Length: 113
Image 1 (cartoon, rainbow, N blue to C red):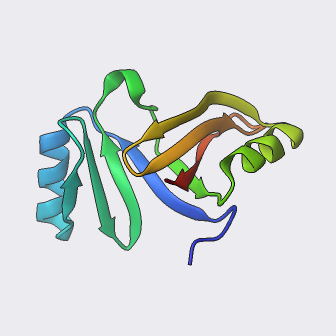
Image 2 (cartoon, rainbow, N blue to C red):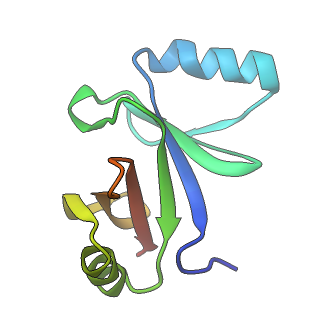
């Protein structure tokens, strides 16, 4: 069962998505679910994905936390001193937002549906 505030997903940048998928498939046997030409999700241990959309990707891996109530979690992040870098938005499978912690690390928080 998913829990609030727990690591749920890691998103990696992918400059060359086909080559990236081939590498992980061949090296580690990972399988992928494509969500359009610029995104592929994997579920081999920890869930994660590769984002090849240059306008929508971070330059380092993006750790994604889970929240049952996305708006409440966004309020907690703000109250704790986090900076919202990308307000709540929808994507296939749910909604999420991104924030920076006081050290400058960027993370995301997502909710299903």
